[in-house]
Amino acid sequence: MADHLIGARNGSTGTRRGACYVRRDMKEPARWLWAGTAALAVMAVTMVACGSSPQPSRSAVPPEFRAACGHPGAHMTVQNVPVTISHAACDLTGVVISCPGYGGATVPRGSGGTGIGNSLGFILTVHPGTLDVTVNATGSPGNG
Image (tube, rainbow, N blue to C red; front, side):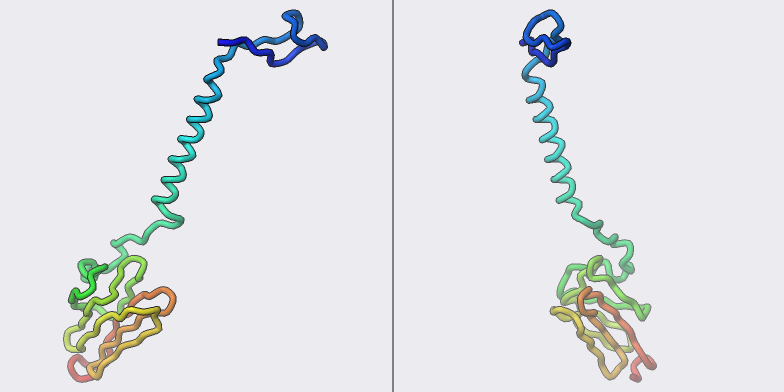
């Protein structure tokens, strides 16, 4: 360890009389620098891993849709309409959705603004911007 002059009193510098000496290990600043850098790295990794906003919970997705989320080509049947599924919580792109007595359709790829309907009364809408999917059925089942 080395002695370092930290400050002086009464205008005297460099002398033992009137000077304030503190014993300090010169490795201490390096330890603090390393600890600060490590703390910043942990914070950065946490922020990147967590993102700027929390991901929507799958619990917000109706149970009948959960197995189809993120699985293009999957087939599913919806019983309760109208229903809107958030694209952020569940990607239904390429999923075939049907409603008993009303037919069905495949959720298209694209930027949204798409509506698909059939003569049986099935209506599927992909909303622009959000890509949320709304499924609805109108009229009497099987009658249109």
